[in-house]
Image (cartoon, rainbow, N blue to C red):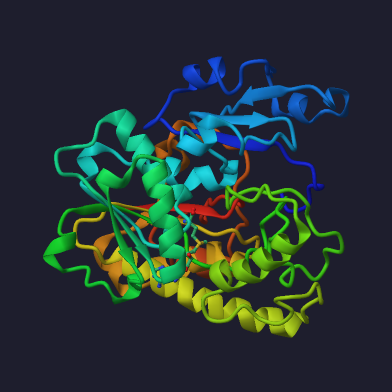
Length: 367
Ligand code: SAM
């Protein structure tokens, strides 16, 4: 995806807590023509037309003509629709939260796209009595954005937010978490896979000369004012940027040296590994989804492989989900990740055939 040009569909997730796809087709998307494929939405021949395509993989997700501004619609303002990229919809969908899973943890929540998606999926299935989503966010400022998004999306009654809390500081054996059956882990990363967003950190893409130009995952970035964009870029690098250190050039498009990139990736990978291993230690947890916005195997496949070699993973029998165990949309997703070297894959508990992972930087673990 990172190689795609600047034009991307405008992704819209219909929030099942506040609305339904049918209702949105009759209202917000009234006047849009439904076409069968995303290629139709993106076709140059479609320029100037108002088109939508219902996504084939993720339920309640719609791809609309590039550049369509939904931010003025009442559906957007009321939280009935959320502007969330397809890639950002996979982690909650793949985690496949169910009433019988007990409580769910979102370990790295702000601004709340995936937290609210978890809530919407569970809403459609019916929350079990007392079932909660625990949403951690270490950064207090970002936790405020999270609170707002969770409220707007109508998921506040089922979400317990831990503002300013470091997930790594939580005690998995605390009685509070005794029913946590599934965790979503979307930690800070290099952001090297982010496309189509004005404020995507550029320093991690030494080879990229043209900054992407449309907005996406942060969901609210339709502001084309260049001053606010610049301010936002600084803020985002600090906020979603790498946990250990964003690295050089955070405010410029200076290329980063290969050595600096490797140093930064390795610091990020250590942090991400600590997060995954921590998630695997919750006593009754059976599912973890791990995602990043990175295209680097160091932050993706290699983190999962290392996590599966950890004592806790071996002791508790964690493994990577087989394709046939994945939810429909993911099972059908054609692309899988890079094969790992035989030494790393053979030493993982789930790696008889090497690990089949998603190069969309998305991995699921179960036990
Ligand atoms: N999942 C979010 C969404 O879809 O809207 C995006 C998460 S963003 C990639 C990573 C977030 O994790 C940042 O807001 C960052 O402040 C937070 N974070 C980083 N380290 C953390 C930690 N140890 N505990 C809790 N939150 C953390």
